[in-house]
Image 1 (tube, rainbow, N blue to C red):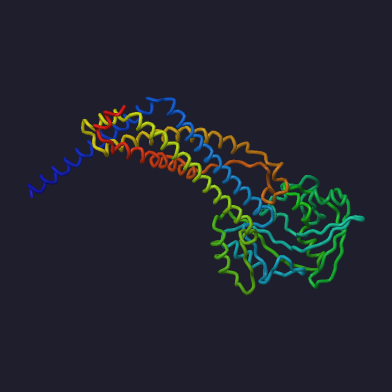
Image 2 (tube, rainbow, N blue to C red; image 1 turned 45 degrees about the vertical axis):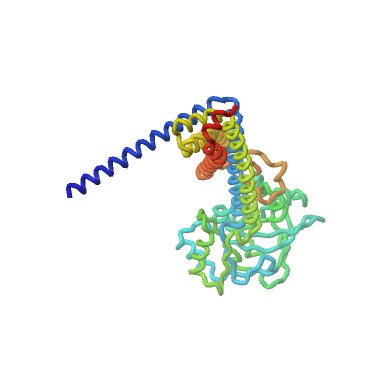
Length: 429
């Protein structure tokens, strides 16, 4: 037993000594690598600046891409779609007649049970607005103002008059009002179809004008209170749509949980991704483009590091030969050269990341005004200012990829250096 303890003690001591030697060797090579970077400061500086600039651009692009995707989702969800919508089974957007949701209270109770309180009951139908000799087809939405304000941002975009009230008139988009010559207080004629498919006509005063950043939406959407809408369409207590906005990032899981309480034979549940699949496709396209850009930039960085380290090896043939002659193994020379390239990558990562974080902070606060390019873009209905949003995981991933690229870029020159024959290297002129 005592001999076993002694052997275990000797083994632990040997392992500790070997670990200490390895750490000292690593620190020695790191010191040599940093010293070698300083030996040719100009060349090292050019390489570091090139790597840092590539990293800077990628972090900025990634942050702007995340900001772009967030703005696209906000514009889609909070303009009209919501996180998900509930309709009667068999509902289609192009249906001329209203399709009533059976027992809307059951839907509301299911949402309350899930802890989702931001929902709005709606009555939607197509209609025609007439003012004198001018007319325009629109989508009429009857909404509950207290509920709708929790789902969409339209109430915050009113530029004249007031948002929908329980006994108010009609609220029009600024583009629509101007195109048919209407102003606050003017009376407008609205034509549509009631529950039976029969034509109905009503007159409503213009009590509010709103303006989003999407003119196409403003020209085609008009709002009434849900009570006035039901009265106009002879559709007492009818609800054709319930939209809900949630902070949940898993819309499909939320829809599946809601579907457990709402039988598919009576209800249709769709997430915003199903309502607006073009948004998801565009996000996926942006992600794929960004990945291609990352590959191109880091391929250029890798070639730059390989070129620099190859020059370093050729310039130090004699030095490397002497180091090898005094007993440094090929693995030691390999580590020394790789650590030098890694040192270049680490310094560049620090500089590039610091500059990128500062730029992202500025762009996250002030953004870039894209009004000239996005005024008719459906994905910028809330704002035309694109703001950067830097995620910690994106910053870390960019730095890790930069360091790995530096290591990979230094492997070939390091391998060439480790294969040098001391006699030939010392004799090299």
